Image 1: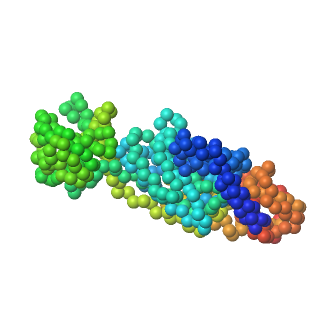
Image 2: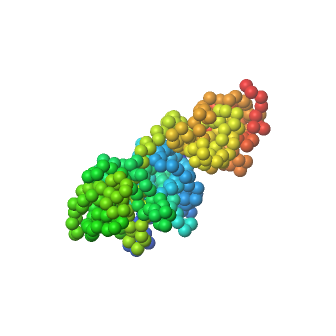
Image 3: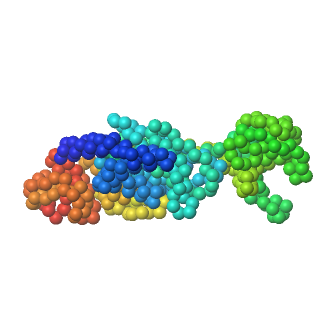
Length: 452
């Protein structure tokens, strides 16, 4: 049965490949003229042009892509996950990322496969309910980078092409889009943040304050053009310059001296002036007041623009040999969660010996597919490999080896009475078994007799 399924999968792949190649019809060509399609959209269009979306596999692939946007898991950055894409199971991953204006989301993808495997990465904004596509890449470019324009969750979808298997590692990080504006300092040296009260609560702080020794260089946080060098009652000696790559102005206040002129073009890291305490900062120590003003939008919080997280990328601590294979609950009960965190709510509580297929893992958590197909996370400490049988039994009568724990599931093999089976686990009235030829599947336990 295993050899037959492998041949059938190969047959399906080459059939799909022929149809996809032949699908570069006039309809598809005209679609490309009028719309700049993403790699994912181009692949989906080829499926539809070849009518492959009407097949079970093609429909499942399209549905998996849409479902990943609805069932995305919320993650904390930085994040890394390693997993396995099975050729015979269309699948897509969805990661919900709490993102802030001023951050650059950077996604890196590594793929290991015996054959070339194309994987599509697409990033969406979520404001307004319906996801809005904002960036894309595929394995031809293994990195996707996107500057966040608004404070809102973003969804990253990762989906491989049909009928190819392989291991993936996806790494998601956030980095500031601007350089830090004070030489030798980092966001750890920010002493006053956005929104702090000023003038006995009459106004709020529209920037961040970075304290440093008098004379420390204040640096251009981006490439730009100086548009104002002035002295004001509140800001003292100030410098304004226009960020050439974004519709915003950067504001430097309380300088001890200004070292640039109006119209001067500067690059990130150039010195604009030296830090002091001029203006209304005369009663405080030397520091830089740094502000960002977006055109037509006013002041915005500079912190995400310059904050570089010191948190390391969490190491994946799962057993790599279990990727794509089966484990089972080792403890009396185990909780399954929708996020890889003990802070996540309990999705289900599973009894001992419940079989789970490992599809990936992050840190000390396995990403698993439940027998009903739902995906969730479980701590690696409460599961064990499902290779060693719980017990052995013999079938009392002819029965079918099913591909799912469901009475209407498809039959993988017909097992005659007297067949010895190794029971690896159980789920909702069905036993997960391995027959004499090594085939895995599900049987109704009412058709078995006492242990051998």
